[in-house]
Amino acid sequence: MSKQILVNHYKKSAKTKQILEALQHDKNHFQISNLVGSSLSFVISETFKEAEKPYLIILNDKEEAAYYLNDFEQLLGDQNVLFYPGSYRRPYQIEEVDNANVLLRSEVLNRINSRKKPAVIISYPEALFEKVVTKKELEKNTLKVAVGNQLSLDFVNEVLFEYHFKRVDFVTEPGDFSVRGGIIDVFSFSNDEPYRIVFFGDEIDSIRSFDVETQLSKETLKKVQIMPNVENKMLQENRESFLQYISSKTVVFAQNIEMISGSLDTLYEKAQTAFKLINSELKHASPEELFCNGQLIKAQLNEFTLGHFTTTSTSASTVSFNMQAQPSFNKQFDLLIENLNSYGNKGYENYIFCANEQQAQRFHDIFDDAEQEVAYQTIVMSLHQGFIDEDEKILCYTDHQIFERYHKFRLKNGYAK
Image 1 (cartoon, rainbow, N blue to C red):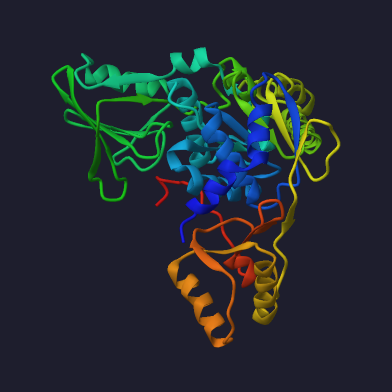
Image 2 (image 1 turned 135 degrees about the vertical axis):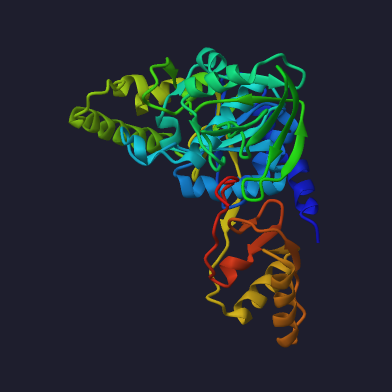
């Protein structure tokens, strides 16, 4: 069974249409109550397809954001979904920057600047806490390279040193570059694979991406953008909140604005304390220049169309869903069979989401052994959390919750193979 049958359900849903109507009004603030588990992913991804506007979804923490990221990637395709993480673990600890996260952040900024079609950006408070370089500064610090450009190899070499890139024998991570004859290998912070730029005299002859492990070329490219580490806190560039960087047409969905604001204030206080304790010859920018507090982000959120996820309806402008979370069966399959048949008798469509075909077959075998007719269909797709939709009469359970198995999220990390 394909996930498309469920996608079509939520495309036609009256509640989905209500959300789309709410999105027609600029700076409209409304509530969406009782979207449970992965029902949020199905509903919001369907509104995204219709709205044709960029989305920013702010969840409570990195783990929750990563789980929903995986749902959205499967429903919308990787190219339409971006993850915007925090770049490091503690303020003013330069050595603790996570290059994989810096690359993901740069990829988002690059996508916004490139004016490609809208995407869904998924984030959390720690990521919004850090300010980003302004669009003007980013443009100034981006080297655009295209096949046929008249550029000398020495010039590119100098620019990369200016961008604080490190010259190495073999490129392995963002911020590395190497020069061999008329070839420059460079790992930009805006792409999860490095580029191989081949010169013919002072002209760029070809550009390809390549695999770090095998060093073999992958994709032929006509033009690329080479970005430095824009999260380097030693750079004295002008910075702004990520909410100032994104398009004003962006639709923001937030899980709990008060909790987000509280998290930001806690992080800001820690940054202020860390700044006071710095004992360094180097000049560091102040917390106000580098970070956002809760009050600033709350004020800026007011300037967007904002959908607030809640568990209860407290406003007239609320789109209310009638959902329940997937119950726990403690691996008792007689209870699961009874539950599925009970809902089946009430006219519900029952779906079990399985990570792979083997898991789907496992359910068929278990139900065959029970020698009972069971009202269910399997869908091979790894879903974050199951739910029961009482309006649409749809039941979606996940295999990992039924078997009480730990379900790990996946984050893109191309260079750290």
